[in-house]
Image (tube, rainbow, N blue to C red):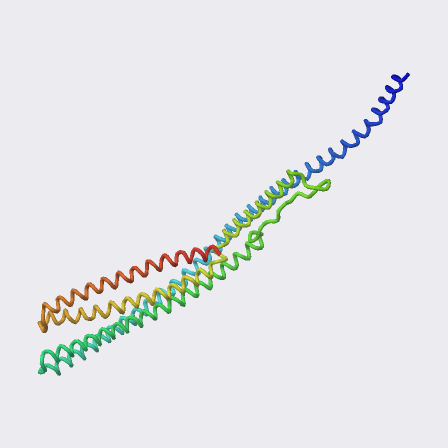
Length: 316
């Protein structure tokens, strides 16, 4: 009797437990199905988003090439106008130099004629003074002419910079409207059944990294438009500095060359100690070489410093 009782009890317990196990398995399957469906939907959304971004990027590149070509033509026209203006300025400069040289030759001839009866030493002193005067005047005229051309060039560069700024702003606005100037929105898994699974968490981490990478790539591709204005301002300041350095060097060389010219004239006229003048001319030649070496060093150092400064500006 006891054995029969326990057997019936076990059978009843088994029958009672079976529906509970089937009921517990049903929600697990539904969760898996829901998560699988959500994962499939995320993959499709990610594919569509990335494809749309790639299409937008290609479309933007095509539009950017067309816009840049249009502005290149505008810039070319500005350059042509400047070249024509520079021809005019050069003609004016040549006329001023020719006039100054003719006036000097007349003054020098009159001066030498009036001192023909004076001692050789006095004539040499006057000749030296006259030669220095001519050299200084010619240098002033050349620097003034170069300054005019330089100011015209700066004005042209500013006009070109204004056009390029207009171009850059138009392209940045276009990129913004196409969603290429910011990180794309991540497509994230949302908790189903109360919390994220490990796979869903990995998906979210990977998606955040992916959109950050895409955004960084987009920003780098737009950097030349975003940083163009400050890079052009940097280049314009360098043009000003280069002009100043060039004419500092020319002034130093002009002083030495003027003295050499005077000594050569004296040597040809046999009006001084040939040996002393030859030694002095050699000394001046050495000084000229040292001046050129020093300015060449300055320019090379400037080039290195500017390259690094420009690189940092471009990366901001």
